[in-house]
Structures are given as structure tokens and as C-alpha cells.
Amino acid sequence: MAYLKLLTIAGSDSGGGAGIQADLKTWEALGAYGMTAITALTAQNTLGIQGIFPVSPDFVAAQIEAIFEDMGADAVKIGMLYSADIVMVVAEMLQKYRVEKVVIDPVMVATSGDILLQSEAIAAMKQKLFPLASIITPNMPEAAVLLGQKIHSIAEMEMAVPLLTQWGSKSALLKGGHLTEGQECWDILYVPAEFQVEEICHARIDTQNTHGTGCTLSAAIAFFLAEGHDVTESVKLARIFLQNAIIAAKDLSLGKGKGPVKWA
Image (cartoon, rainbow, N blue to C red; front, side, top):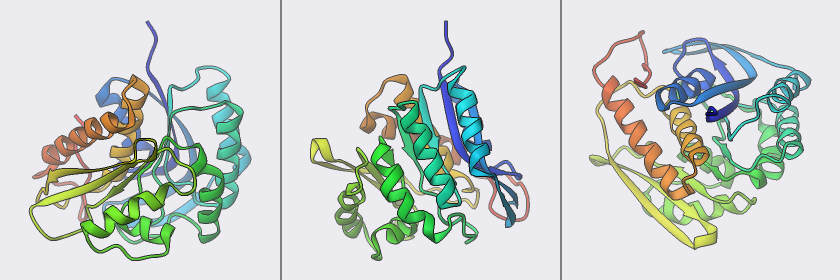
């Protein structure tokens, strides 16, 4: 028997709630073997980020190469990349090893408001990485930056999500958690090959423990893609996993700010 193997290319959260730590905890809970290529170190806790130390692009490449030359990966999840140089080297490695299942969470700004992606890296991500993606998973502020337009409602989300695939990704999931009205949250999935826009609805949970939700969702999507599900089914299964993780952490207390979800 072989492991289901998953690689996260992302930043490290010293507080353990997001980044590669959230990805590894997600995959451990789901029963997969997780591996990492760290792009940046962060000094971070539930209150925010106190510092960022980027890893050199050459060493990011070395980490990815070490994994693919030995274990390989059934799917790759990409999170915080920080700089255009790191974006470029990650794209080169994905093409070198012909990675087919790629989930890109275009992390730009942390929940705390800290900037996690340099402005010049955005164009590089669109041009070099998005064409390699099975799915990209921006939230509303990230989608607004990518498209250069504000998004304020579900109707605007539905109009925006097809535009997110213009750079070549096979699908896009626009996350609507930043909409604050109502008792429900809406995510909008678009799969160009099927000309399909699908609304995914879930109950809004009254909790401040939402740190790492985006990382957890994208990591879970990567797991279900690696298991053999199509994009639509992978998103729906991942959303159920995340919802249960938020509910499990609803009344827990960790730190003085936004706490993490509970993965298992």
C-alpha cells in the first residue's frame, strides 16, 4: 500500500493556525501524508504577523526538487509565495515535474491585514502560475485585487468568478465569507469546461476562530482531488470538512485574537 502524498508550497505560521501548519494538520486529519516546501517564515500569532523572513528562490526550488526526485506528490497546494522570484521558480518546478493537480490559494493579505504578497508578484502569478492550476481559491478582497474591481454582493460574485479563469486556470472558487449580511455564507464555483456557475451555501458560524480557514479549505480540496474526485465534488467535500472544523473550534479559546479551527 502507498501513501496518498500531498505537497504544500507556502509560508510557515509560527502560531500554528495557518500556512503549512494548517495544511499539514488538515491532511493528517484526512489521512494523507503531507510534505512542505517553505517559501517564507513568519513570526505570527492570533493577533497578527510581527515579521516575515522570505526563503531564497533557489532553496524553495531545492525543497521541491528533493520531494519530487524521491517521494513525488499526488497533488500540490500553493499558498503564500511572497515574491515574484518565488512565483517564477515554483512555476518552473511544477512544469518540470508535470504536476497535474494544483490548488492555488492566492494569499495576498492575512486576516489581520498584513501584506503577504508583494505587488509585483501578482502579475507573475497570473501569467505563470494560474495557467497550471486545477483551481484557484481567492476570497473577495483577493479577487478584487486580481480583477481590479470591487465585489460587494452575491450577484457581483457570480459575475466576477468567470473572469477569474481568464488567466488559464481550469476552475475558480470565489469565497464569500467576507459578506457579513445574513445567516448564510456563499461560495461561488466556476468550471469553464462545463460552462457552470454553482452556488455553495453553508451556515454562518458565530465565532472568532477563523484563522487559517482559507488554508484549510484549499488543502482539503487538494486532498480530495488527489483521491480522484473531480473539482466540483472536491470543493463540496472540502467545504464540509472546513465547516465541521469551524464548528468544532467555535467555543474554544487560544490566544488573545482570532483563534484557529479544530482539524480533528
